[in-house]
Structure formats: structure tokens, C-alpha cells
Length: 326
Ligand code: ADP
Ligand code: MG
Image (tube, rainbow, N blue to C red; front, side, top):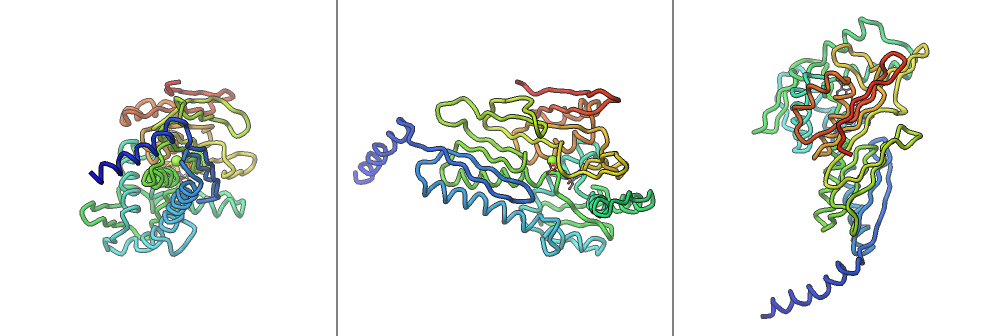
């Protein structure tokens, strides 16, 4: 009886909050993983909202400690440092999960997505800083230390074996999508079910804002708005016009690299991928950028529930392929 009474009181208190829309919109922003992270959600009080934002951003910071390529002591760099030692290294659940997703995307995309491209990415970062185009020998040497099949995973023991010395893992192609998914999980734990997490262009959405049928998400090319979609309970990632590219003798090379050549993409303009999961959406935006229109038409079939809008240069013109539903 006492329990019943408590339930009744809770109902009376919670009904007006639901009925009269007393949930408020909150937005927070923080620079994380080298990008602005924006969080928008609906919550019943300022104190819940502050707590939720703290937890969500805190989770991203925790992931950055594990995945950061820029810190020698990060878990991923310590793992790479053991490459070629013949040892299976036990890793955290987060690192294992992200490597397992990467591996599966590599297999389903005929290797255009490859998390072992670290040596090549490092070479280009160095080249960009010095403004020297690497020699074909340097590119070949870096490429020889890559290949997703050289990364072995054991799901039972959550262990990883990198079979060749000098390998380096780089999760830049899907880490922000994973972080966005994990941040949203923190919000759900606090009962927040209408949320948008934008992790530097990798967006995870839960239920629509109260009283509406979706979040308005605008895809832009950096300066102009190109398309606005109304979405909920889905993820969307865009790769493309970015400040990170290498310009050499007037030619711009993307920071997304074709694993087959070891060189940054020349023809890519912009890719948006929509998927039920944020990590997959992020990985696919990178993968389809490498694959280009024709190959993407084939490999998209391996990702049921995902759609893509891909734009690339074709001579002086632009070629595009768009399967987005709206
Ligand atoms: P962002 O939008 O944050 O720049 P992307 O999702 O477009 O990131 O991925 C680009 C990053 O992914 C690069 O900076 C690099 O770290 C990594 N990368 C580059 N080429 C590939 C590839 N072919 N497969 C997987 N990861 C890649
Ligand atoms: Mg990506």
C-alpha cells in the first residue's frame, strides 16, 4: 500500500512535466579530439542537464585518453609500440570494440577502410609540416607496414596481435563516431532520451525534440547549406571539406588516404553517410570517400540500413551519387 502511494505521487508529479512540456532545451559545446563537440538535449532541470553534459563530455575525454594518436602514453600507441613482438596484448573493452568494428568495415569494403594506416598517416603529417612531398620509396616503406590482415583479434580474451614491427593503429576514421555513440549512452543513463551529439561532424540522434517529428540537420560544404534533413534515432557523418589537407605545388591532397596507393585522395569532394550506428556512419563516410561513386554502389549493399551522398570531381565537373531518403 505504501509503495502504491509512492507510485501515485510520482505519477502526479511526473505527468505535468510531460504534459506541459516543462522539459527545457539545453546546449553545450566543448573542444574535444581536435574538433568542436556540440551537445543539444531536453532535460527537466538545470542540475540534471549540467550533470548530463559533464558525464557525456567526461566519457569522450576518457575515450581520448585511450585512442589519441598524439599521446605516446595512450593505450593505442602503447599497443602499436608492441607490434612485431609476437605478444598478444590484452586491451580495454573500448579499444577492442573499436578495432573489431574497424576490422569488420575493412572486410566489407574490400580494404578501402584500414585502421592500420598509421605509418602512412604519420608520414603525410610530417610531409605537411615540412611541405615536402614524400618520395615513392618513403611511401612504399610506410605502406609496407600497413594492412588490416596483420592485425589479429581474439574476442574471447579481448587481445590484439600486431604481426609486423613498425605497425601503427590510427582510429581517426571512426573514433569520433564511437565517442558520439558513447556520449549519448551516458545521457540515456540519466533518462535523457531526446538528444543530439555532434562530434565534429559525426552526429548521433535519439528521439526528436518534444512536440516535433525530428531534428533538423543541415549538410553544408563548409560555407553553404546544401540540404536539410529531418532525422531521429539515427547517425550521420560527413567527411570532406576540411582544414586538414596537404597542398603541394597547387594540388590538394585529402587527409583521407587510399590504402592501395598510400596517397591522399585527389578527387574526393564530400561524403555523408547515414547509418543506425554512429561508429559505422563515421567509418563509412571515410570508406566511401576512398571507394568513389562506382565502387560505393557495390559495397553499400554490405551495409543494410545505411545510405550515402557522395560527391567527387570528374574532370572539370562533379559526379555524385545520392541514396539519402529525403
Ligand atoms: P575527420 O572528419 O575528423 O577529418 P574522417 O572520418 O574523415 O575524419 O577520417 C579521416 C581520418 O581517418 C584521417 O585523419 C586518418 O587519421 C584516418 N584515415 C585516413 N585514411 C583512412 C582510410 N583509408 N581508412 C581508415 N582511416 C583512414
Ligand atoms: Mg570517418
